[in-house]
Amino acid sequence: MKHLLSLEKLARADFDKILRAATAFKRERGHHKTQPLAGQTWALMFSKSSTRTRVSFEVGIHELGGRPMFLNANDIQLGRGEPIKDTARVLGRMIHGAVIRTFAQSDVEEFARFSGVPTINALTDDEHPCQILADIFTFQEQRGPIAGKTVAFIGDGACNVANSWIWTAAKFGFELRIAAPKKFQPSAALLKRAGGKISISTDIKATAKGADLLYTDVWISMGKEAEAKERIKILTGYQINQSLVKLAKPGALVMHCLPAYRGKEIDDATLEANADTIFEEAENRLHVQKAILNWAVS
Image 1 (tube, rainbow, N blue to C red):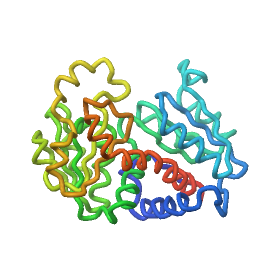
Image 2: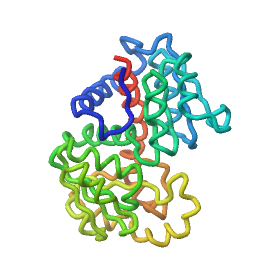
Image 3: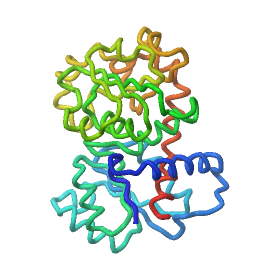
């Protein structure tokens, strides 16, 4: 049985298996040779709202022959205080796998431990593994191997998306630069655990200079709404815009995991100029997550 709980714990060989399979799933969409989830029911347990993650997993499970069952945390006993391990013990006797989007990383890990079914982290406050797998897939699809390239992350460098980029830098051998205010920089302990060629700076221009990929995420992640005013004040200036793109390598990709708040972490003109890449990146969530599901049951 396999779980995708954290990119820290995912072996490089498994990264490669998933990315290779994603290429085939994208190419063969609509005429897959096999349906690895045939006869299976997978629960989607979401405590956080979602567009791309929910739709891509529901469609992906269906296209692989399975039946997705969406469970909002507030609609089941989990939302009334039932321990996650008890929910896991019940569902594990009825479903074949689970996709969980929630706040605490420990909840996903505890569900996997007690359910006895393959469990996929569809986002926690600590990590967003499915997103970064799709991001790397998108980069390599358009620019070839990411090894040896430079990724510049601009904005909240202590968010779950930045964390997941950190875990992949050493595994794939690319340079990761993060430009963020000191309050929103990743911890020294995390960087030490991850290893790899990672640099942290408050200098947005130096971070972007010569980069192969400029990447950003929202300034106000779900669950941080009470901090919105302070976050906007501190992060203003950490924006991907046309002047910053000019500092990157000619032909550099600009990516955003969406949703985008135009005028904050990215300006409207830059998003529109790079919309083909950004929305291809969004589509690739479907193909990569089908590959993850296939890997989990193989």
